[in-house]
Length: 598
Image 1 (tube, rainbow, N blue to C red):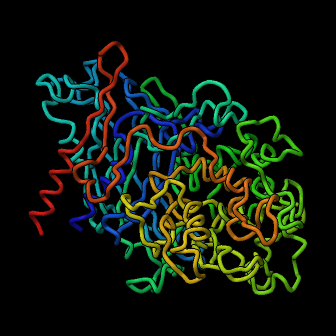
Image 2 (cartoon, rainbow, N blue to C red):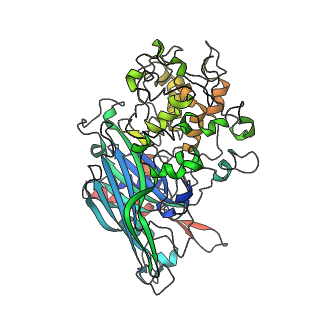
Image 3 (cartoon, helix red, strand yellow):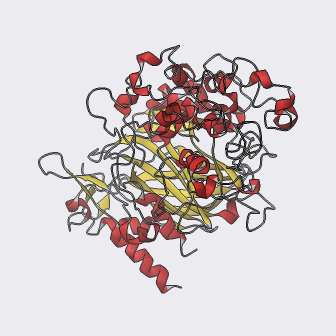
């Protein structure tokens, strides 16, 4: 329990603390764009590299926050239910664990237009945290009336005697709480750790920009974060042993998603507003960029209203994964030439001389029902028709399961190492985060050890880099045995704060997962190295923005002293500079307290 506080700061350490944001799901649907307080921004789930017995869950909301956004600074909303959902049992529909957060906001001094003055705060925010372990039938309050740190307005408001007469690190320190059931929680504004050139990507795929400078559209912006550190023992499947049998133990696979809900009826009055009626989900998020870059605009509001458990049986959305729009711009026979930024990303149109994964083509469907797929995940007797549902759905074998079920450790979903050229043969076991209980969720196999952030092979390319190591690095590629490979704990097996999810997902659309299992790119010549120019082009593709603007700790052991938990604040210096307050003192204080209690 003592170490949970430090791990919580790891999460926060990877994002700036304060007001401003733009992430993998910002203003992504017409309705939710008009309701930023309820807008899901990102979801993260990863094992703590310092406290490996714990998992970090983060959900962020309210995007595109600017540090100088007064007088009504960005915040969580009243009359909204913010929830983090956890699924760990595919045999039972719905959540096994749900954490709910609700907020109350009061003005302590309504006579002033200032947010902070003379020790009082306006927009003073507190939250209550509840937990359900029976699918939301009953709830238990595990934290109540916990203060949310105010915005870091500036030195006069925070440090000065006419303000709060304190320090910002003290405010954050006070905000870290242990729940009645053993979790640690932090709620507050943080620097948005997501990074992408938003202007470029939505300018018809100008990523990287073909003219002008590529720039992080989220730099110096913040978001509102709910962060929880939870022992694995709380999250594993009921009946699972204390320790996993191996790194593929499916009893340790969880699906994580976040949502925001409002009551159906909003009534405006001269005194303000009131809410009534049933609660309705207005936003959700699991995998990054799903609703933003996969679902077309005509279905975005519909997608937000569904739970993952409803989505898994909904066939209206499947086609956007079977034939993703982004793949059109990675195919020279379609619109590839119109998007020069995606030139290195070219999908397989003639993989192994037979298989066409272009939009509208059949992919592996020609193998359905044949002896070649008997006993594999593509056999109807194994997983039904999930992965080969029909012709004209080429990406049903890779993109659809990545977003909807996770990947099983069943042929052909093993690395090509040891397959001797047959992609359907058994190869090197890779990951198993298969949980076919819902639709879009962020799936994490908690049995996979975390990669230390100071490991020489740590990479922000997550599973993509783990696959490269498993195929090319002699330490891992010399045999087909089960091994831990660095970055097997990276996206899309969970999501770490450092993971470059935009690049990984674009590489996945290009077919990098197909290549990893032996369905090589079209320029592969049998008998020669599969590391062809096409594959190298995909692996070396860059969006131009490959890291957060605020540096993250490089060494996990240094986090207590180097945590980049920051708060953006506008100051009047040349009219536009901002100051970042590093919360090293908080982390050092926490370390001292922990050592004192050992």
